[in-house]
Length: 211
Image 1 (tube, rainbow, N blue to C red):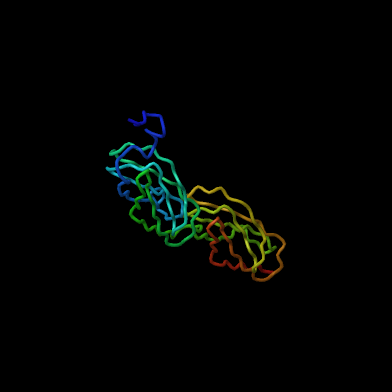
Image 2 (image 1 turned 120 degrees about the horizontal axis):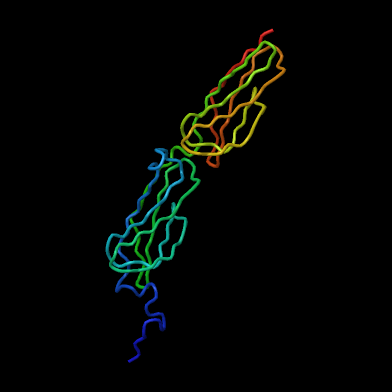
């Protein structure tokens, strides 16, 4: 009578699991749950609690495709799929998704995620070993926040030291530079912490070198 056996002509393949288009999945994110910081690195999860399953899920950020994931349908059981998101700068983002099977495409609920802590935490500058001969050590300390991957010390706007840092957000980060041979006078120092999302600058520290 022309009916295909399982495994023939695509019968039994994903998309043939149910009798209709997928149910409506709900989007959620864990942004801020791991460190308390909305740092632009998180996971978006689509959950279909019950109903016709999809065999593909697509996630969009502000209308641009983020990822497309193949799924195994098992209607009407719950279906869950997660997509990692990394490196977003500070901004507000709208995520949407869709479940697809052979019978159609169903949009998920939208999800708004606000990122406010993507750039490094604000560092503080201190000076030690200050001597009248113009030799001293500058230390930058970021005590808690999104970590940096690099740093730069600037003296009167000119870079006098730089290097890389290993991020372990939200733990503290420290960096130092040794300054020597400065003539008497006043020098203004700042430090920049950098990561892929941007740059954070400290409050200036003025060092007075005496005679």
